[in-house]
Length: 372
Picture: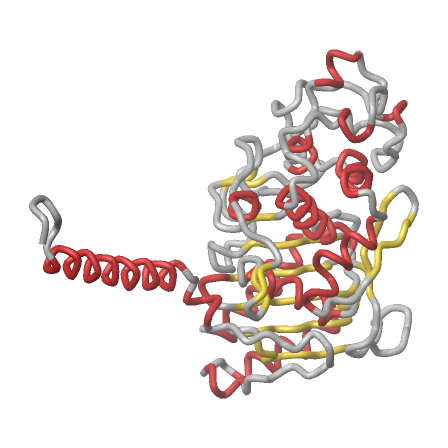
């Protein structure tokens, strides 16, 4: 061996160290995988097969469950699904209480109403992941100058993040707050200083995605999300809004994808900071609102159309880590990571609230008895 050259023992130590580092790195990567995700079942995308889990395995109160399932159709519930670890525990369908419309089944289509906002938030995140847009971009970049009736200076201040968090500052007190025509897009407050559940401001995100991707909204959804997880459904214009329609199982598939943090049976649909923040408080004006998604377990919440802040959790009967896609007439998608649960409710309800959280509270009063 030449003077100054490392000995064979030195190289052996290096190899051992590298082997240990590879072992350590592999197991760190494994540890970073959510144990929740690895324990989930995913239904196949090409068939209607879906594994079921008997209620008896969970130790739930079956009498309380039967009573809840008897109560749900009295509230005009049309479809109700509970997934545990991705498997179906409960799947029930009913007819309409008031109109006598025939019973739904697993193939029946129903509207998501504002629960579709959470789906839109996911599509915006996917577009950002593909580097088609950034949430800090000015809205003008995609809609052009003059998409509002405000001054050029005021309009320039609105960015995509403000649409996602309902903080554009646009006036929602106009005659039709669903109409996004420029004459209805009026200044009320500086962006980021006022929270308001404003449909028109939200609905513009569809046009942003279409402009950024060069695809129509339905195609972008199918190519980047729907087809990848076996989720059927379509966007359809209703008045000034684009509303998503699907069967209840597709609603549940989207919830399972959220529970799995964007992974579907080994395939990554989404990842990144955007999606971590999607289910966290997005601003200080409404602690119970993420990116077009409702959050439970926060210190306070603001209901749509209300200026008042209400103390306490939005759904105090439910787990604090639950987050929800919520729409008019009780279109609910509830995701509970701590319990590996996804719950779907579709149907109608009394009242005109855009987000009937009182109905969700009633449901959870019964669910709490079932699962206790």
